[in-house]
Length: 340
Image (cartoon, rainbow, N blue to C red; front, top):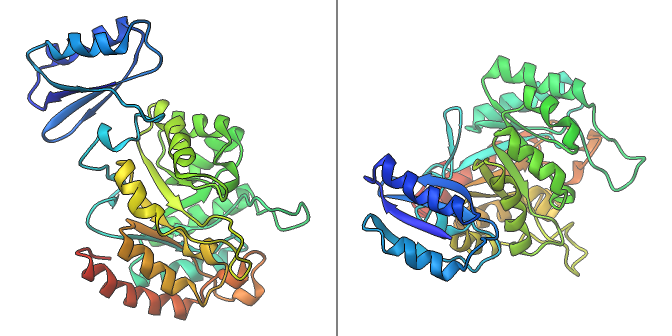
């Protein structure tokens, strides 16, 4: 249930609504916008929801009451119709500027990360990506450097002033990764790891939540709801490709999902054309398509020497190709009324 008040509503009026909702068995989440205050009542109420809504509508300071029939509430567009902006330090994701997060799939060495990060910063990227803990289909594939990799990312961050996004795979590692990273990433294989989702929700750190490669949009938004339910609204959705019958590309980046999510949810959404294609030659075209479709940012893999990469070399852009792409993206961003 969503209770909508004017932004000028007093604290006493807000408290009256929240007290009633809590008495009926709801858990409370409040979103304060410029024009409206939205009070979300989440959970299974102990009384008839329609009757509760009628009672609240009778209050003179309540503008409207919406009963959300979607299985997710806190991430639904109705909860914040104007859309959300996730602010990480001085970077805003979901605003007029398109944010690029770029870097190697896996942290391999300090020198590799530093060289890549310098190119990311030179091109206008604000956030460095790199994997310290790497989930692999094969147990014999490279699994990442662990905390050593986190330390490398943090050192480069301090030297260049970039923010860092990196993946966390285990609820027990959330505290550790949070010490080094500005944004926690939940990978495709962990979208259904509900304990991990709850733990990053409790951390209050901004989260990039990748869509599971076999997940529907509703399942994806329900995963986001797990994070929001713990009190963390700083969620960035990431379309990274779904598995289809087509074997030429690694996955199929679902461009449809970008405008669909914009309609269904207030959360910002970015796209990962690297995993979405698995082929570096296709990455630039799909990156442009994602921006044209309304994506708020991109997550791109870049490596100084992709042929030597320990993981995902075939989908990684060389530095010179990344620099060229960033220039091309400026024109696409301008065409849709945004900047890079």
